[in-house]
Length: 164
Length: 325
Image (cartoon, rainbow over all chains, first blue to last red; front, side, top):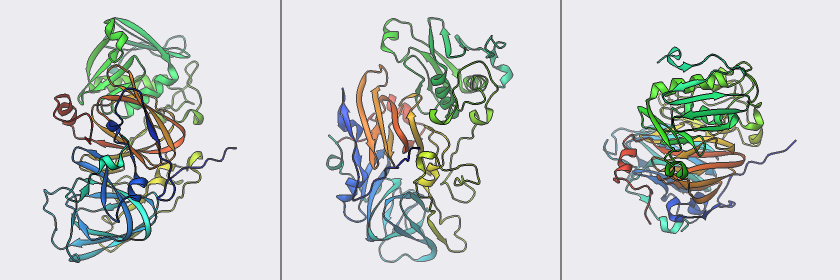
């Protein structure tokens, strides 16, 4: 009986695919690798690895404690490597206007009621509820990706991260 | 429309009904589907046809074009559906043998559902990996309505949130797939203070996917306005060739898929894209693609469900490529 081994990636070990062009431009496929992007990123930089009009998926290197952020709509994080604690606070007053899309950095400590926290490891997906404040804590370097809308702190460095 | 409105014939010698929709006529025998239309006819393996038909029905004609093969397929106009033969085949177009008819979505939906139900025998599951189901060939032998009418999972916020779609377990009928036996099943730690149980939520996406009983069937697990995470597990070959009417993104979560990318309208080869765990790639809005997964793999299909996108792209208001750099 065959024993199957599921291949996941990590910051320390990943195998990148590629594009064989027949009649096209490799730039059209905007091809990158999240682990490679996170290896070249500073902790908690929000580097876009996918973009569809205003929507983005951001690759985030988790390492140490992030600043507090908030967003007027739901966001979601999925961990690909490492372990991250997500602390959540229900803000007494929303920090972001209802029509503002994407997350914003908060100044200082959030004022509100502690909602609880998540501990996420590889493959776990967590909800960052609208109008909460959240921050990440990771004891060692890891990687997550975030489903959100392009915000003021979304970094686009396509030419650096994509095959061309 | 009810099933009694579907135009069909009494069973043939092999026990299968034939179906008529507009100028198209469909019949099956032990091994093949035979399709005819006013300017031509086509024959294809019933195995490939039922797998494609299952996706088209379950996805309610999906985003854009669902090519069953190089001749036959559908184009979704979100309210109506084009059914075509040879429309996206350069030779058929040049010979002026291509044929397209437009139908109200409920009309084609009910005909396709009736055909899928009648032509799928008891031991065949069109959604399953070929290694996990019996063959579809032979004379009519019962039906498999439970398999062909599976409910499509679509979270409204996120899987695992109270009152939303729930995680898969042995008890709910979703054992871990044989190719994902090594995928950890640990659940995240969720520490919700009283009153915040519906807001503090998480689930193990990889464990959830490891328990999927279908292949090549994206289903929504989280929603950020029109941004839809539609992960799926893939094994063997995508049974359709998907023609995009908007940009679509793939994030390979595990293992490997090889994508054949062709021009959407002519089928001319453009590229082969090999994706491994952690790779991210766009499928532009002017291509068609078909994937090959040597081992069961986890793929995050990321869709933008904005209903205005196809028209904006066709008018040139949105680029067919997602990023310029």
